[in-house]
Length: 144
Image 1: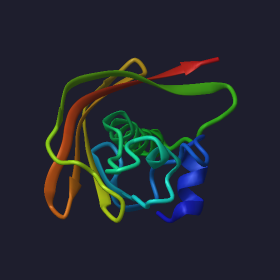
Image 2: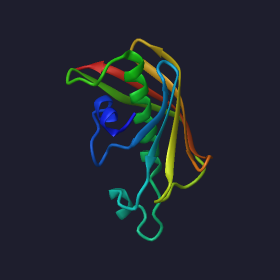
Image 3: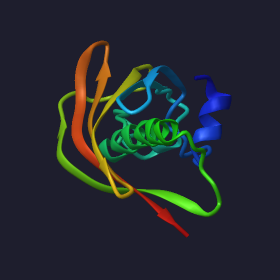
Image 4: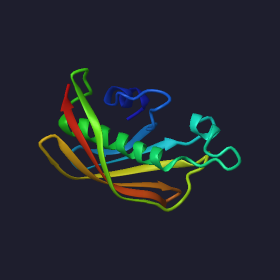
């Protein structure tokens, strides 16, 4: 999926869109996407000026956005003004390697289960094949 199709499957926009491309997707199972991390990201101004590191919470958000794409594709739906897909929980979050400008953050998500609009995922973020962060994520689809 290129950025045009990603924009059709996520409501997020700059500066909060954190998925640049989807390399592989198997609806109902998994997704492999990535985020190109550049020094131009607005969060690097304050985190940290002398040693720029992508905030862990934004790594989790990037993983959740990839999970959102996977979920919408799995449901064969696109975001609508009548529904929202909330980031509902993070368990077992671990940060193993700093993510820096110039890194390509690979986002790997597997669906663990889905029931009554609640989705649970196993998520990993990798840089150069090395684990940067991992977590169990939960998202929930709700009608507005």
